Length: 63
View 1 (cartoon, rainbow, N blue to C red):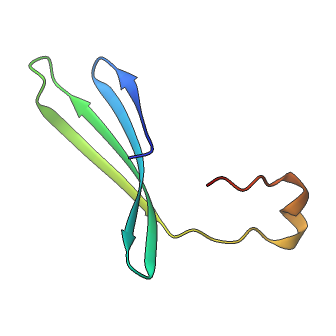
View 2 (view 1 turned 60 degrees about the vertical axis):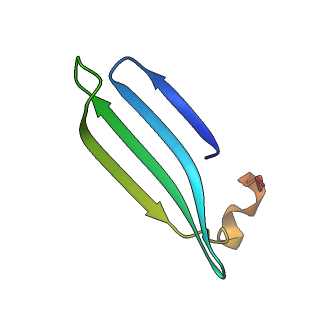
Protein backbone atom coordinates (compact mmCIF):
# COMPACT_ATOMS: atom_id res chain seq x y z
CA UNK A 1 0.00 0.00 0.00
CA UNK A 2 1.20 3.46 -0.84
CA UNK A 3 -1.40 5.43 1.07
CA UNK A 4 -4.46 5.00 3.27
CA UNK A 5 -6.79 7.97 3.88
CA UNK A 6 -10.26 8.36 5.28
CA UNK A 7 -12.31 8.65 8.41
CA UNK A 8 -15.54 7.30 9.80
CA UNK A 9 -17.34 5.19 7.26
CA UNK A 10 -15.25 5.80 4.12
CA UNK A 11 -11.61 4.85 3.58
CA UNK A 12 -9.47 4.88 0.42
CA UNK A 13 -6.40 2.71 -0.12
CA UNK A 14 -3.93 3.36 -2.92
CA UNK A 15 -1.36 0.80 -3.96
CA UNK A 16 0.56 -1.02 -6.66
CA UNK A 17 0.27 -4.70 -7.52
CA UNK A 18 3.39 -6.18 -9.10
CA UNK A 19 2.87 -9.37 -11.07
CA UNK A 20 6.44 -9.77 -12.30
CA UNK A 21 6.45 -8.07 -15.70
CA UNK A 22 2.94 -6.69 -15.21
CA UNK A 23 2.35 -3.75 -12.82
CA UNK A 24 -1.07 -2.33 -11.94
CA UNK A 25 -2.06 0.71 -9.88
CA UNK A 26 -4.98 0.03 -7.53
CA UNK A 27 -7.47 2.32 -5.80
CA UNK A 28 -9.77 0.67 -3.25
CA UNK A 29 -12.72 2.49 -1.69
CA UNK A 30 -14.18 0.84 1.41
CA UNK A 31 -17.45 1.89 3.03
CA UNK A 32 -18.37 0.62 6.51
CA UNK A 33 -21.58 0.40 8.52
CA UNK A 34 -22.00 1.50 12.15
CA UNK A 35 -20.60 -1.82 13.41
CA UNK A 36 -17.42 -1.64 11.31
CA UNK A 37 -18.50 -4.17 8.67
CA UNK A 38 -17.69 -3.51 5.02
CA UNK A 39 -20.90 -2.67 3.15
CA UNK A 40 -19.32 -1.60 -0.15
CA UNK A 41 -15.97 -2.42 -1.75
CA UNK A 42 -15.16 -0.54 -4.97
CA UNK A 43 -11.87 -1.17 -6.79
CA UNK A 44 -10.19 0.49 -9.74
CA UNK A 45 -7.19 -0.95 -11.60
CA UNK A 46 -4.99 0.81 -14.16
CA UNK A 47 -1.71 0.07 -15.89
CA UNK A 48 0.91 2.79 -15.76
CA UNK A 49 1.12 4.70 -19.05
CA UNK A 50 3.47 7.24 -20.50
CA UNK A 51 1.88 10.68 -20.86
CA UNK A 52 1.34 12.01 -24.39
CA UNK A 53 4.11 14.30 -25.61
CA UNK A 54 1.80 17.36 -25.64
CA UNK A 55 1.29 16.96 -21.86
CA UNK A 56 4.95 16.50 -20.91
CA UNK A 57 5.35 20.07 -19.61
CA UNK A 58 2.69 19.45 -16.93
CA UNK A 59 3.80 15.99 -15.79
CA UNK A 60 5.94 15.14 -12.78
CA UNK A 61 6.95 11.47 -12.55
CA UNK A 62 6.40 9.90 -9.13
CA UNK A 63 8.23 6.83 -7.89
